[in-house]
Amino acid sequence: MSRMVGRILVLGGTGDALTIARRLQASDVYSLAGLGKVPDGLACRVRVGGFGGSEGLARFLETERIALVVDATHPYAAQMSANAASASKLAGVNCWALRRPPWEPRGGDDWRWVANWDAIRAELAPFARPFFTLGREPLSHLADIPAHQYWTIRCLDAHPGTDRARVIGARGPFTLDGERALFEQNRFDVVVSKNSGGAATEAKLDVARERGLPVVMLRRPSLPAVARIFETTDALLAELDALREPIDDRMIRPGS
Image (cartoon, rainbow, N blue to C red; front, side, top):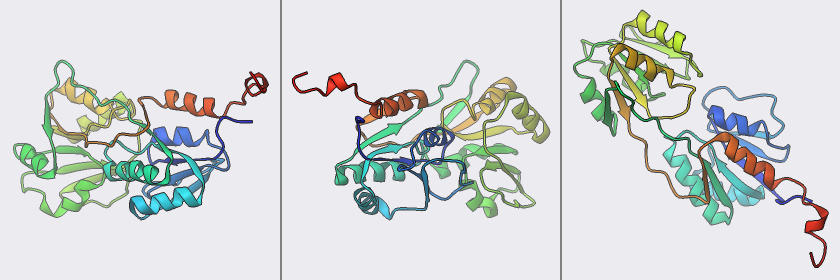
């Protein structure tokens, strides 16, 4: 007998989410939006694509008899997190979220906080060789690069770039030595980043600090309240394991 009867749905797309997915059972579901490589070797079912908003996700939870939703999406996937929280309420299902702590500036950092793309462009005006680590968004602005700038963009997607921009398709983790070499080769004079948190992509901030470069940092979006929030993958996995541990017979004897 287990403490939880039902299936788990993990909303993924991050390295942390994949770590969780590797611990799921055959009846569980790992969901991806469709960006990046679909992982193989998982015991659980992998689902790719959207749900049709919060109502579509709620129908999926009911149809698939999902007992628990785990939101392990990127900290900036605000719409998906909102849909997960809303759908879970509609379906009467608990929703947990993995929300790793944001990075905090250290001594020697020059972080310039911004809220949107227009503010990023304004902050970048004095610079010539920005390094973007924002994901896909800069790709839609390649035709608008100022005449004095050359962009380097790192994201998951392969892209040919232009004569004014280089696109690096890569997934972390990134090493300190690797980042040092990249900065030296490309002569970046500013870094543009999301405040994703975690160790996998933090080395770029260490190198920016070493080189005295400013970092234009996109603020995190507001995320919805859910039943439980975990800051680490290990803590969340420990709770999932506890849910599925066999209950000692003494705990279920009549009168015990």
